[in-house]
Image 1 (cartoon, rainbow, N blue to C red):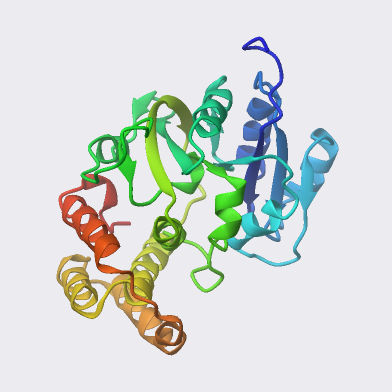
Image 2: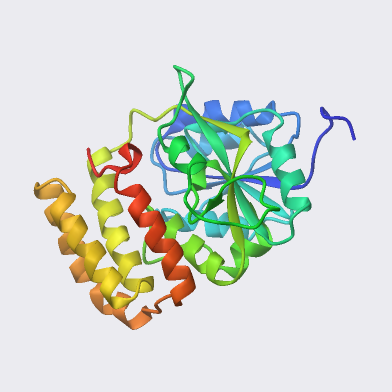
Length: 302
């Protein structure tokens, strides 16, 4: 197979809501990839003509209409239609570098216990590296020698190619979290099953943040979901410590107050589903938590 021939090992999955222009740009760039991947879009009840434009301009794309905003769970719906061994997640304001999907498939083909590989993220239009890349590159987690790069404790859905089998075995994205840091829980459950996640320096995805992004709303969801993940999977003392740290360090404003109120309101279902990880995995989660405390890429701002 030549490096410019189509590659049928990967399906690209995109979720979108009311980002007509960004999505059409992304689909145009995905259409031109040498791998020619199948693309599945879940339209989370857009009201700006997004679905109609996709059907008109990109008839080769599989377009799903759940009829309501499923958030990240829209990816679960798309994965039901995936028949390839790998899934490349992509946001409506991001796109994969030509050749990266083929390289990701090669890495996963060669490593049966590797659940996913996360790419280097380039911020457009400036072409600069996203600050989170340094954190991925300097991950403190130990891993086996066969990993293609540093072992990771989580992944970024907009920049990761996952093994379809692993995604399904982990149960996909949890409906209770909906959106915002939803990857952390799935990643934890994959690690618990014995899968590995890794950063791969030679994969690249481009991200041009949508001006329609509501950073305050995303911060509320991010804090809430961090708290819910903490109480779903961390043992009691680490959960108390992480909750206390968040209370001391998040901005003292109405958005943070809403996040903690929403988290408290969800405690009944969280505690019913609580299933703390074993000590060996908790040590890895604790190492990640310590490393992230000084990260400028994970500040709760906006």
